Image 1 (cartoon, rainbow, N blue to C red):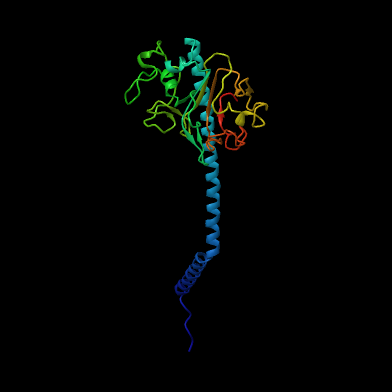
Image 2 (cartoon, rainbow, N blue to C red):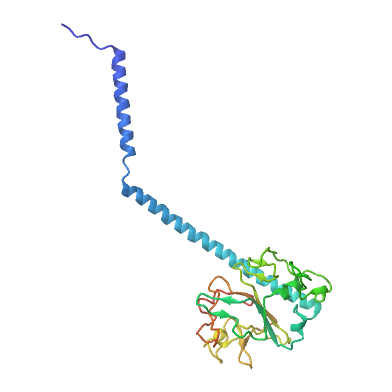
Length: 280
């Protein structure tokens, strides 16, 4: 007995089913083709690339802070210079102006990773805690935000009531900018350090950079000066000018000895060489 041939549409249906099963098999094979090792390798590569990107971003942000600090030190320097040209004296309090000091340094209290503190103890007479006196005068502020008179009370230090400095005001006493305590802080949150030559001899000595252990090439009296400073008859190193403005910068913030000023902490020391200096 002869077998009847399959109808054309049945053959086509069988072919389509076979093709569908083959495609499904291929898809299943593709999905299960990644081994655990391959997946972990991809994750590791993504992690490495992310870490590299984070390093680049952090470096860019740190560079931006350094640029900002350098700009702000120059702005402070120019503001003090302009004020002095207007009033023929520097923007300091009456007490400092009448103190008879040859030089004065304004700044904060700093501690580094090694537990060293600056300024030294006891605090020298020519060091003023904070730079708020200068800022209140340059910004023409007679009272602190929370109340109380500043060094410019009743406009006694800025009778023309001129604003010499443009600076960001903050709502606290720790953020970069001029805080509620009127201290001007750098991008890392440390008060800017400002030294002023009060006796007009055009030789400005900074409390930190004046000591030989920092600014002498040998770390002792007699060595050539670093950062353009020169030794004076009193043994300290000074800048040929009237004003020095600087920031502790990103590293440390410093390397110095509280007691002896002699720990091989030259200005070229890794913790010191990234300071932002207006005279460089």
